[in-house]
Image (cartoon, rainbow, N blue to C red):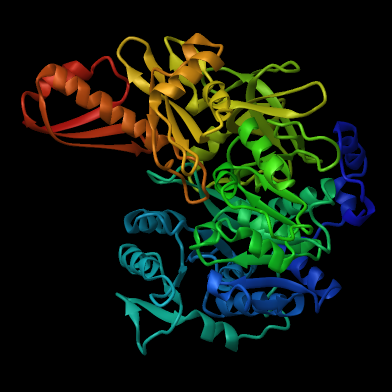
Amino acid sequence: MSVTELPEGISDLADVLRIEATPLARRGLPTSTYAALRQAAAARPEAMALAYFPGMEAMERPETWSFRAFAEEITRTANMLRAEGLGRDDVVAYLLPNLPQTHWTIWGGETAGIVMALNPALGAEEIAALLGAAGARMLVAAGPQIAPEIWEKAVAAAGATDCLRLVLKVGPVAPGESIGAVPVRDFDRLRAAAPGRALSFAPPEAEDISSYFCTGGTTGLPKIARRSQRSEIFDAWAIAAAHPQLLHAGTVAFCGLPLFHVNAQLVTGLAVWMQGGAVVLGGAAGYRTPELLARFWEVVERFRVTIFSSVPTILSALLATPVEGHDLSSLEYAVCGAAPMPAALFGKFEAATGLKILEGYGLTEGACVSSLNPANGAPRIGSIGLRLPYQRMRAAELDAEGRFRRWCDTDEAGSLLLNGPNVFAGYVDPAQTAAAWVEIAGERWLNTGDLGREDGDGFFWLTGRRKELIIRGGHNIDPATIENPIHHHPQVALAAAVGRPDAHAGEVPVLYVQPKPGATLSPEEIAAWAEAEIGERAARPKVVHIIEAMPVTAVGKIFKPALVMREIESVLREAAAGAGVALAQVRVEQDPARGMLAHVTLAGGDAATLRAALQPFTFRAEISGG
């Protein structure tokens, strides 16, 4: 049964079960992303598949590709990569901003072999380490004319690893250009010369590994998740099967999240194209493109955008962009993920724009989306929605070693576990893979690392991330308990609560607040608001910091480890002052093996004295000098 045979979508758990009454094997899903895109091209060859403008100055003159042309570019890329030596089990990595060539690389790369997304914001050493860990054979990178900082990192990373055999540059290539012994060739020139009508080799099968994604943080070496063709196809299909109002032939999706992120690739990419809709790729830097957020409603009006995917920080920034004077009648939904959306922000945005926000939940290891609020009916603000059909999702009680004890009751919080065709094939590192699974009655479930509950109607609610809980004297405090009341303050744009190391309680809650543009806030005002609005006394923040801008990840999610690092440095400096030890330098990092680690250089005093002063704290410190 096709998506178009389910026009009403889902509104409750009974609808999910209704869809599941037909076995998934009878749904006739394509075997690969390449097969799916070719099917879309056969169905709507002349319809627009992709529009692209690199910056706001080019918004009125976008490049466009029909489905036929789009499929041909992917075919050319796949044939070119195979001709250059990429085998089915070989990895081609990419360091690219949001370019059309990024899509050619993604879908052509996982047709010819395995494509690996790399975050260009990582340092060259980290990029080299990830290339080595993945055994990448090729690297596609933006040349200096497009993104000089990316090319500089690509050159440094390629020179620091011995696995690469070829670098493909998007941009001009000098005769005989190389990086050490690795030749550099022109991506666009080679692609243009490759055949685009059909593959010159057998297409991938459903269980073939399609992509590697780095996950688990922006500092330290991320884990590398292995995903199959089947997982990506199923997830893209299931989103539309459950929510056909979002994804259909008339969809025009705006893509502003970076294309090394699963949401950008699947929600505002593959899932749209599988239904015959169009994607607007706006700005090479995505939402960070200069003036894009300030002129976002112009983009919506110009391209008749129907849906866009975002995160709470982006929606908060859009609140400062007036909607008056713009025809937004095409716009139907905004999908919000990556982090829980404060209820106050939800209400403010819908009131200001009239736009319906659908909150969802997902993770790289689950392809992308695992649950989403239904487009039918009134939203359940704060919920992450109903699970996708054919993917099981439950809350469980686990023991200290992560082993299954029992399933949680209705409305009882526990560890969120997933099981279904969207779940990944494991990490590149087998030891990391073993830690990801929970064995239950002979089946493997993915431990998401998130805490949540399922209500009596089948809707799921996040209650926190296990690693983000603030543990005060053995009492677990969910940061949302602090953040949600603060977001109701009329002058607050964003709030984030983290734990500050404490010699007596282990941790105490502290709060960081970003005011709305033009607002003036004091720590005392927010502290008084917290005192009045936060019912749980232990959750009331000990300290309030007003900051100009929250630290965020490349996809716009608040990066709480950066705030924790600030608190650790502050505690360390206070402890040193109390012990009479002078510090020359303090640097805190998130070490992948040891957690938060402080590097301390003494200017005077005794290292042993400082170590004694730091004994009550759980973070590690390496001390030198003195």
